[in-house]
Length: 206
Image 1 (cartoon, one colour):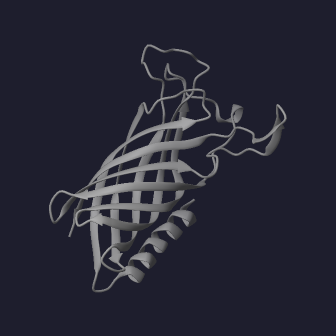
Image 2 (cartoon, rainbow, N blue to C red):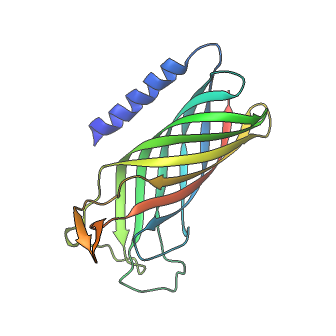
């Protein structure tokens, strides 16, 4: 795991170095993460986590730009109500180091759209029932240490230095380990669960 983290950090600095130049910009970013996990028999963005990190970007021309981000992101799932004590449900807390690699387009001077991919390394995970009882990991499918997400977002500059951002992110691969099998005449991955979350962030650009 440490090797994966080191690779992400090195890759971020390589991306930042490649982006460095006359139109290079960098900043820090922090925000909240409403999240859920598809495939866990629950619904709703009821898990609220946090994200924080740094980014670097480079303009390609007046409209297009490239951007890399490295963040520590907390995501997972929880039941909609604290009164729900259904022990068949599983609340999930996962923390990742995420490396976002984006291509963006300014539709106005202070408004842009971006699309990208997020290689992601699992740092911490905890699974428990709504009543707070930890789940025995030997009884459930394990977590993959590495994930990949697709991401789409929008950003708006409030001032020259401060900007608001909103992204939607979804796992390309299941966050749990599982082989591909046939279920009800349909080919599916066993234990398939996918991160499904948004980030609402405030950034400061130097």
